[in-house]
Image 1: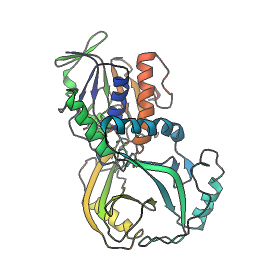
Image 2 (image 1 turned 135 degrees about the vertical axis):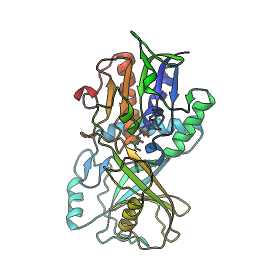
Image 3 (image 1 turned 45 degrees about the vertical axis):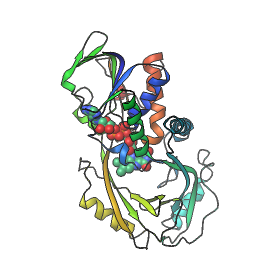
Image 4 (image 1 turned 60 degrees about the horizontal axis):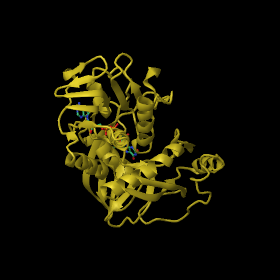
Length: 345
Ligand SMILES: Cc1cc2nc3c(=O)[nH]c(=O)nc-3n(C[C@H](O)[C@H](O)[C@H](O)COP(=O)(O)OP(=O)(O)OC[C@H]3O[C@@H](n4cnc5c(N)ncnc54)[C@H](O)[C@@H]3O)c2cc1C
């Protein structure tokens, strides 16, 4: 079998790159072994403002211009609803926190997002001593629904194999690459934290961070915005909320832990004071990078081997932009953004 591309991994990175291939009518085959869960458990939030420091997220406004139409197109193509828009309410920790918010209002990149009017409303069940600041134009992509629907779509077209990609079977030819029964021009590796098993790219400095989330049912809590305090409380319907997330740089498994649960319960006590039950706990490893920039580009020795990784904590916003940049680099000779190019390592 001959294809233009083999794609290893169908999370947000793989999905965004496959969309480029389909648009250009390239042939491809995807491998997915369910070893990583990041795109399945992600909160899916998009917000171009760092709410600790009130600074813009790297390139986020430009990324959102591409990402929002990208997800809208996927909603139409897959006949699903995944983009839910809402306001994010930052619960201020102190007067100083509030003052920093006011000081940030003038930043040109934030002016469309930060609402100058403080929200002084009391929301039943929400603990907040210093009011809220509204961040406009934020929302959430239901990444689990999207990724699962996309895998089904590829399955229906026989374009995905649900099996482990075995690196030992890669056979490099002069201009192409063989993998088992397939000959491809290129392999694009989109394995998230799975890159650690990849002998061609595991030299890249991933500084992965496990994250855990709880799903709670809190019938008395009635909020239709994303509440951002020491953790986030994200409404997902039917009085159910996702609560998270933890950051753990030691545990490298995708298994929900007792410590993660206790940490979230403990923090949640300071955010809401209504009864709730825990209905689910999930975990995944975020592919975060030491310099907080994606890992994209062509292998220094083998030009048939390519990586698309390092989406970190913000895969929803970043994936469509970096996938497009990579595709144009490979097929049209356009430059890769130096900040994301793996040649920096
Ligand atoms: C708790 C948590 C909360 C998060 N919240 C947000 C958020 O609110 N907003 C946001 O934008 N981002 C969030 N993220 C980050 C986001 O999940 C990531 O940036 C993104 O999902 C990474 O996508 P990816 O495709 O690079 O990696 P992954 O999602 O890990 O996908 C890689 C895929 O490759 C497959 N794979 C790996 N190795 C192989 C192999 N050898 N053979 C076959 N298949 C293989 C894996 O099974 C996996 O499906 C969160 C992450 C976590 C863990």
